[in-house]
Image (tube, rainbow, N blue to C red; front, top):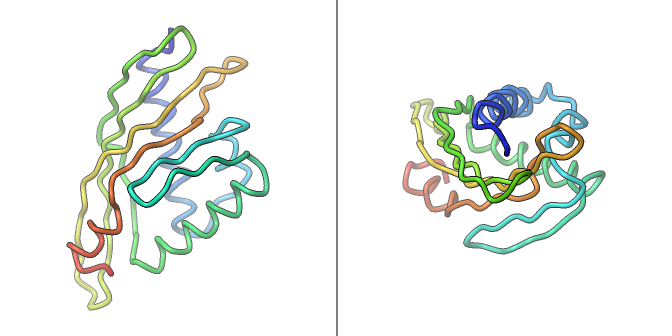
Length: 145
């Protein structure tokens, strides 16, 4: 079974790498290492599938550039709950708190949750998918777009 403590530790490491990426100091190989060979992304805008490697790095680069342009400053992993699927897979609901700076210099914190599909492969945890809400609507609601 995938241990809850291991999943929490994984997402605290994910938080650190994510914040490095927001600061534009991350090694994209470290980002890619958090993901499985293939992945699925589910949002209200689309369902996408892809492969780890140059495709994922390009998607992540574009995503982090967009977050920086929106004023993203820091993401904090507040809580992680785990729903086992089988011996080597689980759904991790991760509650995030994001700090942003609006164009006028004012600060705003947005709390949100993302469900990650996580697998244990060769003794390491990897994300093979994520399901998220409408972040664009949240950004508009808080004056970031």
